[in-house]
Length: 514
Image (cartoon, rainbow, N blue to C red; front, side, top):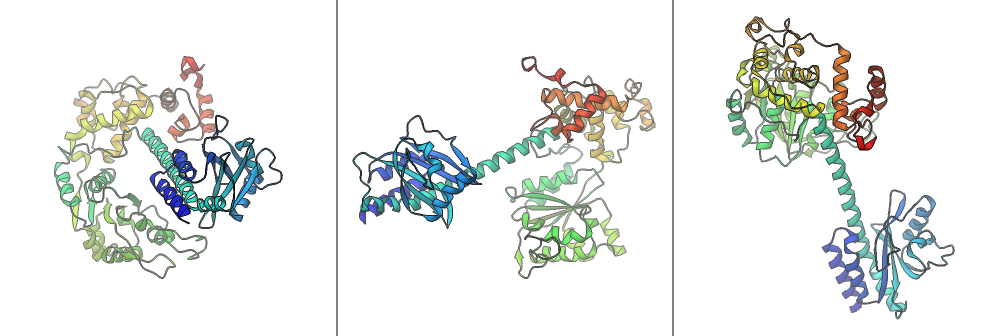
């Protein structure tokens, strides 16, 4: 018993020291080999209908980690694991053993196999080739059987580690794809004009970020309310938690409760499983309720309760769920006027408007036009695979002559259009703004070099956009990082459009690839 206890302690120590079983196989084998002479050790993992060799020690150059079986072969190994215990296997003549499918990975040897399971779930198989002087007597069998539990835990830990790594890589791939589409280096939008037109707003952002009270952002459509909300979150103590944005005006009226507060399985037709709402998913972080003025009165009542009590009940649920998230709301509507008209609850208004921030429109912060335009020009160059553009005084004059009812969002669209219409050579700001009809009378005093440019046809603009993207992807159309992904279209649709416009993907492939 002392030998069994000492071996198990040694195994548990090694299992806790390492995460990946492939990195710890030699130490695990050493922990067992100190009590029973070993020549080799293999570990096979079960999962997703497959059985794969994930680690080996002392097996020689013939062992490789690409061995994998599926279908009935994997099912046979799983049946062995569910039976449990240890078993002898002659890999040279495996016969009809449940472990026959893994014999090719072991070679010509007599081995001892052990079933690895945890919480009644099959994890895999451990295989030992004993030393020449070792005998599989009752004592040795007891020692090997005692090694199964710590080895199963080590394999389970390794599996979970690789699953998390796979999810991390997928998330990073999605992040990089989003950055390419947005033309940014980071997902955090910079605050352009923080030292000029938005100085007073950013001072209030720094104040409200230090507290946990609800904040209300008021401003015209496209003025940057989400950017300011993210700035509050990033400067707050919750910056390590999630930041989730919900457009209250985009939720179907009959699904608002389910989407905000979640639902239990069977709560209504189609509710086949329990679902967390936006409030629960934003726990420990910030929930940004955009267009809060579009929320129906009935939903406003339940929202008020969540803010007041810090708890909610899922649709169809009986128990109370505690939530801990910071609320930031935003709207372009006149909430005070809606309160007077009875379209917005007065008590909710007072709860949300603890610390209001009013964003100036773009026409009220014209001093930021050059910096904003340059920022969007740099972003367009990355998105469309074009050279970097510099905003000149003539372009700034044209931009300053317009009143920008769509604010910063409209400016971003104009700069994108100007980059495409310029054919990759310059920013055709005049053409992008539909000069001269869209500019006000102040534009007549501005330089008119760009006003003379006739706007290109729609096909020409689309051609420039596609060709710029193909230059970025080096002619790649499908798959991650391909032109279709960057443009947000189906690859077949893109190819059809390219054929119509006479664009050949081969013209954008590097010479070495042709």
